[in-house]
Length: 275
Image 1: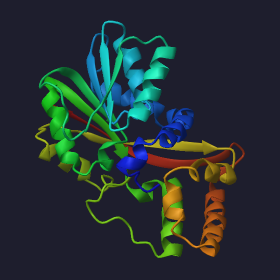
Image 2 (image 1 turned 90 degrees about the vertical axis):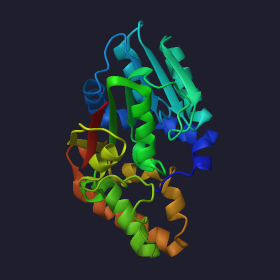
Image 3 (image 1 turned 45 degrees about the vertical axis):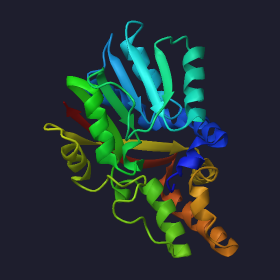
């Protein structure tokens, strides 16, 4: 759950792991992604830029929205991630998707060249999110919209909070410094609005949207994260600390278990700015 470094993100094994979680991410973020596409006015015939596309679940959703007369360009730092997105689009017969490796803070694209820009769960991970949003604003047409989804505050997301707080406490690991890129960097009240303002947007409503994570059990939830970016943080613990962490995490997650398995509430922020 710590942030991937750029080098880690670009590795094929990271792409393989991220790709394996596509279905679960869609379960959590699919509905709010539809809301983002609607808020960004993505419609048949639109030209859409997807920044930090990863393996492209939201890219494909946008491609289906814009239809055969539209176009979606998926950009990311990782060619391995984009290769998964391109292959998935090919398998689905979507010929309106293109992928390009590109830095979000320096988009090698013409100004005023897209009807809409989207960025799902990427903005808070950029070293300079205001610069990234400035670039997104530059490439969208006048009157066009830039829609983003980021995590809300850590305390609104107990699934992540339980992992983070337990591991950090047991390992005496300090939290990220203010302004440091990580999953919850833009979760504080007003933080996302402030970044939009600094990027030059005048109208940028932000709304909190509830999400829910479902697992078979607390043990199942733990299995879904141990192969990802939490592993780096856990590896900073010694063996007794690691064993204690997994016991405590499972105990805390268990309070969300019920007749339908484990259901953990969460919250994301949906922002949209108009150029």
